[in-house]
Amino acid sequence: MTLKYGTGIFTAAVAAAALRAETDQKVGWHKSLSNIPVIGPTGISQPITWDLEDPDTDTGYLNSQDITTMIQHMGFRFWGNRNCSDDIRFSFEVATRSAQFLLDTIINGCFPFMDQPLTPFLAKDIIDSINAKLREHVDAKHLIGASVWYDQAENSVEQLSQGVMWIDYDFTPVPTLENLGLNQRITDRYLVDFAQMINGANTTEGI
Image 1 (tube, rainbow, N blue to C red):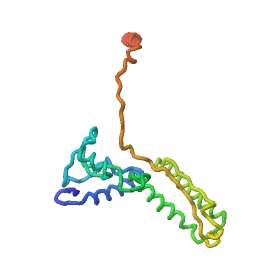
Image 2 (cartoon, rainbow, N blue to C red):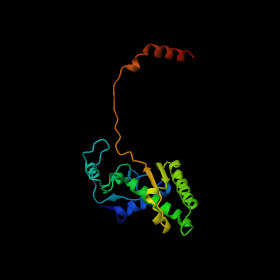
Image 3 (cartoon, rainbow, N blue to C red):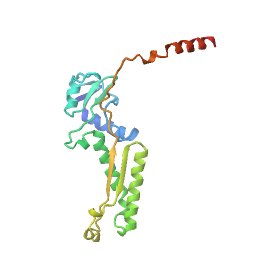
């Protein structure tokens, strides 16, 4: 799919990459690209059908195949949250993006610890440093939760003696609200206090 920008044409992938960078900066890497207005396009090469209430559309079919597309509704915007991962834990774009961001951040944050004497104090400093960064992201609502720990089973005496140490961490990414179900009901229960409501209305009028 290509997008028209005045007399120019760009691929949707270029627009997606630019929007991803902008969203990371302004909102956070926990927000998917879906349903964010794309500024600038004046048209798309392949208009497709879309309906918020009916999945039986071109967009609904593409999304069911884990394909993000672009719709025109109150401007142009990408629609879809999934990627092609075979691992369901990474099927949301934000899960993959969160994993990438955390790995890069933690690796860069560990740079000062490299080539330092490998002591229990160093291990604790590394764990405390990573934990502080994870708490920061949880407090910012970029993650649901996260933790870091030293697993003795992952670190043999032989490995430690050769300067090799493994630190484990896990996290829960913020899922994207992809489907919202609304249960509608008709009820008589708001008529139970009908008389009292009339009295309340009369009192108000009297005031």
